[in-house]
Structures are given as structure tokens and as C-alpha cells.
Length: 323
Image (cartoon, rainbow, N blue to C red; front, side, top):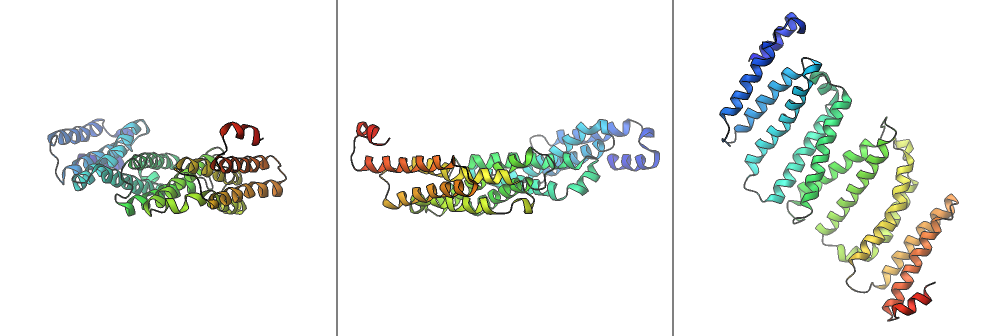
């Protein structure tokens, strides 16, 4: 009430004529009220944190020099939301709590991003600052979801997958129509890495890793071919980051999947390697860049070495034969 009354007096008297006590008294009431509930954890207790946050925001938005109080209030909103959520999920296992908090952070991220013009006007901050707050929540949500990867991947899969897709989408969209010359590429790379992780999550969730393992290189090469051809500039993204992604993704997939082999690969693994090598040959031919054929030659040689090794040829002989 004292904070709202102070806002009314500010509009009537002007900020310069508002006595400093109208900044201090609401803060004292807010902090004292929060101290009274220390040690209490009920379904309503998060509302006191929310009330204190609104007091901090109401005071902090009045003047530029009070901006630290404003940021404290903004952080308090997220803390209060987390506190209210914690009461509802306190009985859940840790991995499900992390997934739920990552989802909450994702909702807050999109809320700040979509309501950026209105929030900037209300909070008296620039849209860039509002977007930075959204980005901070995106980072925290991504970190929480990364921790989930160390637990059971099939714990609450729908919520985890939806959250991961939304976080990936947010990162990739940030690379579009971005006025900062350096940041768009970074957002695209981060978004693609998250999207790659989502694809791995889906493969493990559906238990089809063994079925696709030998074909993943070829699948990545086919996807990269279309990524390379798509008119990204017409859609608002810079072209070079997507071209680099298309170049790196197949060879990175080959390197990572080959760490998974517990037994000699089957014949269609060699087909997958040849398809991937063909992608780089095609890339070199279209763009007249012969250096990309070096990747193709390396892949073919690698498949040749694996084949000879599976035939029982000794490593010492391979040293002579492979060159």
C-alpha cells in the first residue's frame, strides 16, 4: 500500500518533489514482512516473495539511480515463481525437479521475449536489457536441462523434449535479424548444438540407437546437403554459419558414432561412410574448393583401415598398406 501510494504521489508531485521516505518505508515493510515468514514453507509462502519483488520493482522503476533495486525485484519474481513451484513438486525425484525448473525458466524466457515492448515501457528499461534478462533465463534453463542428461533420459520425456525443442528454437531464432554482427553466428551454432542434443535424446528415447548407429553418418550428410542449399539469407539468417554447420556436422557425427562400436561394423556402415565422403566431394565440385576432397579421402582411407583390421590384418601391416 505504501509503495502504491508513493507511485500516486510521484505522479502528482513529480519525482523531484517526492520525499525519500517514500522509497525507504515500502522497502522496510517488504523486508520485515519477509523476515516474519522465515522458516515457513507452505503453498502461499512464495506469494510473500512475489509481493516483495513487486515492491522492489515499483521502487526501482522510479529513477535510473534505483535500477539495482529494480534488477533485484526482477530476480525476485523468478525466485518467487520457483518457490511456488517447489511446493508443488517437492515430492518428485531430483531429475524431474530439474526438468520442471528448466520448463519454468523456458516459460519465463519466452514471456520476457514476447512481452519485451510492454515490459520495457513498464520497467523503464531498454528492450535490449529486457532481452538480456530473457537470455539469462535461457542460459539457466539450458544448464538445468544439461544436468538432466546425467539421469534417466526417460524421466518425464514429453516435458523434457518440449522444453529442449523450445530452448533450441529460441537460440536459432536469436540468430535471425540480429543487429549485432558477431552474435547471430554464435546463436546459430549454440542452437544447432542444442538441436543435435535433442536428436540424440529422441534416438535414445525411442531406443533406436542400435538401428540407426551405422547410418547416422549418411543421415547427417543428407541433412547437411539440404542445410547447405536452403536460402537462409532470404529468411533473415546469415548464410556462412549454416554453411559451416553443414560442413562440420557429417564428419562430427562420424567421429562421435564410431566411439560407440562394441563390435566390427556391418557392411552398410561402409555405405554410410561412402555417402558421407560423396557429400564432401559434391561440396568440393559445386564450390570449386578441392580441399574438401581431403575429408573424403580421409574417410575412405579410414573405412579401408577398419575393413582390413576386421579381416585380421595386423596393425604393423596396416602401417605399410594404408598409404
